[in-house]
Image (tube, rainbow, N blue to C red; front, top):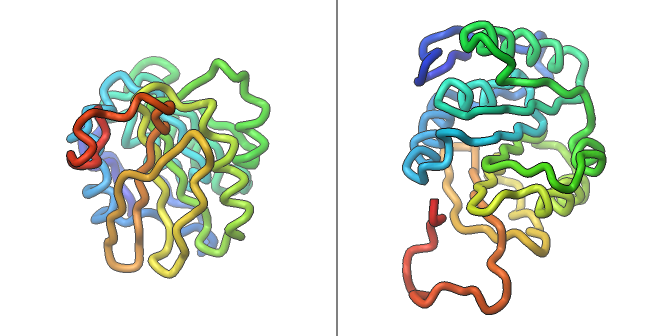
Length: 206
């Protein structure tokens, strides 16, 4: 059973999506992912978007670790219902609505959200069999919704090719954990704004 690993709700058990159609992020990968995000200092006070949310585990983990708002986007009926159950755990503990659930396709949701809505952390954990062009379509809709210094995390199978990063986004890191690859991306710097220390480590400014 999945659980919240750390933060104000650490140790809380989460509801899993019924059936075998959803592939949850393992605790090992989740621990490694959130360790990196905390090293970037992007979670506290963050606005978080969790696309292809599944059970909502990544989003509610973010809320437990200090995110001020979390949007879970999931189309599948059973998964969206599970998101609502897990969101309620966090919202009840916080005494306010921190986590909100939106039943929608990821690209449709991004296209209908007002252009001035931005997020500091974005998770994408699509089904491994999602068509690459469908994934790229979602990525193309993301850049205008990224806050300055935002971090985007894409979880894919190690057998999947690197996605086509759209204009306005650039990949800065890749990590492999068994059969899982995590791609980390950020808003692309405008032309002429490249850092002077071009040879420095390519980690976000945080």
